[in-house]
Length: 128
Image (cartoon, rainbow, N blue to C red):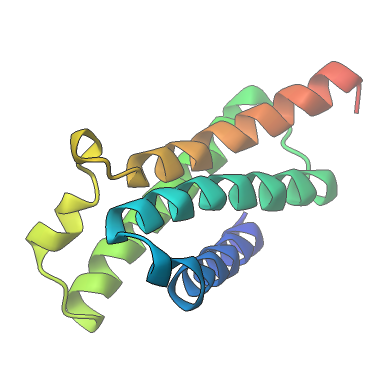
């Protein structure tokens, strides 16, 4: 689970770098954020699907617990690193959770819980 979270971290970093070096210059910050969140969800799905083939989830509860741990680790990293190391205000960090203002970060976090469960269901239904 820790190795996979590390791979998810790399995928998130690459996704953010692609946004900043690529398409963010041609659109609003909000639109770039939304696209980045959606591509992040897809990247996370791919990473988790590949990891689940190597290290299968043993049960629904196992998949759910791992997903919750990944989400919690991501939130902790985001708040601790981005506040204390990057100097972002608490208000700025909390603003990422304002779904009603078009911020889709909560979907990315939810995908960290949903993808493992979906990977387990797929494996369980195919008899793997």
